[in-house]
Image (cartoon, rainbow over all chains, first blue to last red; front, side, top):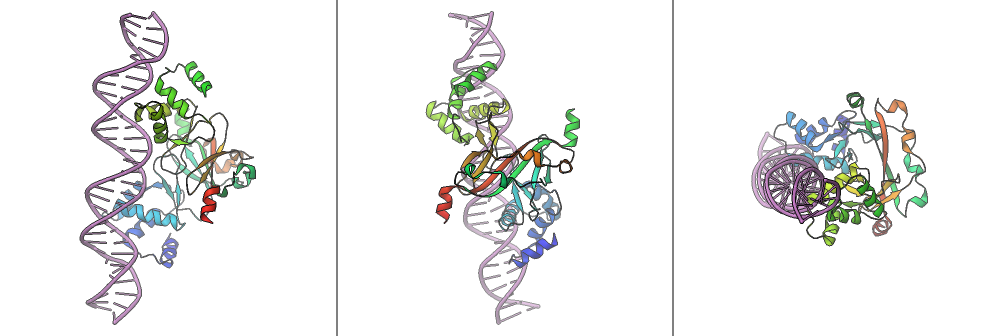
Length: 140
Length: 140
DNA sequence: TCCTACGATGGACACAGTCCAAGTCAAGAA
DNA sequence: TTCTTGACTTGGACTGTGTCCATCGTAGGA
């Protein structure tokens, strides 16, 4: 994730302790935190950090293409730092756990021209829904 | 849409003027209204209808499987009455317009077992993103 | 027609996110 | 090293979306 900090510095980002902490919290695979979760974890490292700063920083990371915003449920958006490896999401309908997954085919290729209604189609996001192992067991 | 009312009556729904109006508002293809939009349109037909009733009714229609809830942007959820014909969504990144689309392939088949992490996968939703014809033109 | 349980109401509340004026500080200049 | 300045942070107010609840109203069966 320090490469992220390097890239950001290279893009002229002013490096502040707040931004460092947010980047640090977003480190790792299968990380899909809400803004408030990011704020809570960041506050453990830097207690005075404000909610507004977390929102600002996440928004900037998204518009720089370093983090992906995921809307899995119409509640809080989640932030996925794994932006440089194309992938989709598998969501547990019960507990909301999210995993990154890699289908064998790009769904973009499967939308025929006559189903595009004149749109310039740029991307396809797939959300797979089901039950995670623990919720499957709990429900059985 | 009167088949909808019939089906609901058959399921023991008490038929009220409020529920009739909500069902009426949701009639048609390519309808993807937010709860507040449904409330606004319903209020034109039945001015006293309350927001709570619209939310309740939409929630019931969703849990009966008559309407699909769509989270395209992490803002307001949208309600899609076209629940009996499997389809996906094409969303304009600029104006938020939503169209129903039918890809030539089911993405569920393209998620290999080793990418399922023990989940019981039940469904796949695809959101295609791009620019609608008018926004493409406006941006050109 | 009467009853009553189910549904509607509206206001309070909770949560997610945005905005803004004022204060702070990173990093380049001297 | 200190100075300077504009970018960044802060906290609180505000908006939009959705939920909850006590109370009132009414659909539809007896």
